[in-house]
Image (cartoon, rainbow over all chains, first blue to last red; front, side, top):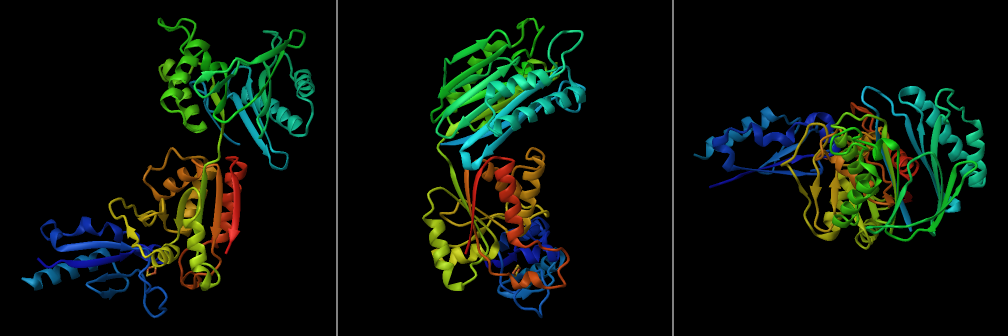
Length: 85
Length: 383
Ligand code: FES
């Protein structure tokens, strides 16, 4: 089965700019989809160096998400998983 | 030799403050440590003030190299005598110890302190001056010796209970400590002090009948810790920084995302963030093989400074990253900070909602607390 890879930035900047809840993402994914996602954290995914993008940051399958929220990420993941089938 | 010193107390049931006071000070350039335990008559705020007065007099006299006996006598003469009970308003024990081990202890009115060499009670030569009721002991402390001071609230805890009508008593207490030391030979001053106090309050069915306090001085080989935080000013020094930490003979901590990435890159090992234990308060910890603890930087350090300052390391949950970091500091004796001085441009953004304190200031604050409040040996290196 294809797994969708999520990377959450747990860096200082993303944390204080609204990302403090993101590390708990897995708790908000519908249980039936949990086995199709792989969530990892990273101490900084280096987008904060780019002034034009707004933190907090996360990546899904390599695509960058600015101003990430749990809601946004969960919706995106569901969309991607449902697209697979 | 390093002296790990810690104390704790529980006030008598119903009192907010404790009538026993423990103070200590390390005099760095003289390689000496002075510790004082004073027990004020009665309990509550009055006792606390008496004890505090006594302890600070004793500490200051001794720190300023007044001969122990003389300071003890001056203190005794200053202390008022209770009209009713004809006893002094506060008792005290002064420990003056040099880092090479030579130790003198002078005691007035407190229960006899105990000294353990590993797990054996050390018999000390004690000279008692009948006239002024001062007892003076001298000995040469060795590595793995412990001096344990306690107030009568400890030795007399449980008094009146059917199974211990006269209280816990020195004999039983010594057996208890001996047992602890046999099973846990390297127990820290903090943990030993804590178990003694909690046992004493258990004797009183958790309702202390008197102010209960205990201080422990533990002579040991220093446990070393290095904390590395912040990228080096000069990018070419990344490798040097990583090498300094890797070769460090002791516990290794990294505090900071960018720093963690430098290590991962130089050591060619992945950084893995631990998402199993997250709280919205602080970013989670991470792991890099070969490093003992990896945390986020400035927020975690700031929180840790707060914990160290308030000594509230009981309240916060134990897997909170700042809590882990604070515990790590306290479990070591000699702490080296290796601080990178490159400014993180991302933190300079005026749109940032919180003021992120400059790394250097937070580190200085932590270093100050560790040195003054917890008597650690601290060194800060900038790179
Ligand atoms: S702190 Fe999140 S991308 Fe750098």
